[in-house]
Image (cartoon, rainbow, N blue to C red; front, side, top):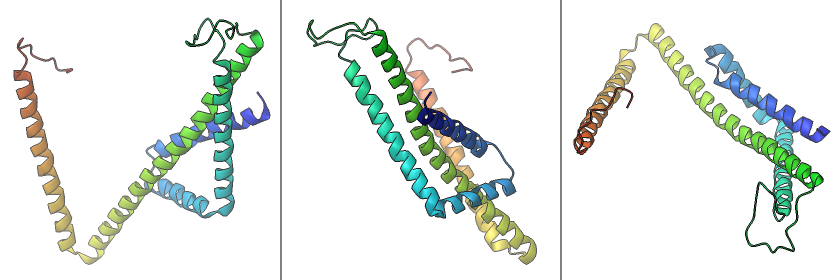
Length: 196
């Protein structure tokens, strides 16, 4: 592999490790430090420029691979045939063209995976930030409860939880009713197994 593709592959491995670390059920203090680090990176101008530069290069590489594959698509290939091409234009792919096609497909998959993982990491970081914020609010609420003994706000949240639980129970009853009505439409009257 060339240096460029080695860097792309290395970026993909780093992104996969980052995604796994973000998805691990880590304790609150470690998650908070990770989120604080992401805020620092987000404010860094150099990091922003590096990410934008990387995205632009990967998009250019992705589009270059697509163009190369389209160029090779006009040849008669025993594995991929294209309609609408005259016999004169059809020719067997040489070994060099097959190698070029293979490398272009590999580069397409690598650059596409890195671009997709960038989007996935951004989404997961947003979700983890919301989780950390909610847990911080919950810990602050518990700290206020232990110091102030303010039961009004706690009772309000308990009522909200009770209302949401009632909604969930209602939805479960509706679901079981709809399921039994749907099962009643079946003319064979076959009882579904537990796995269904």
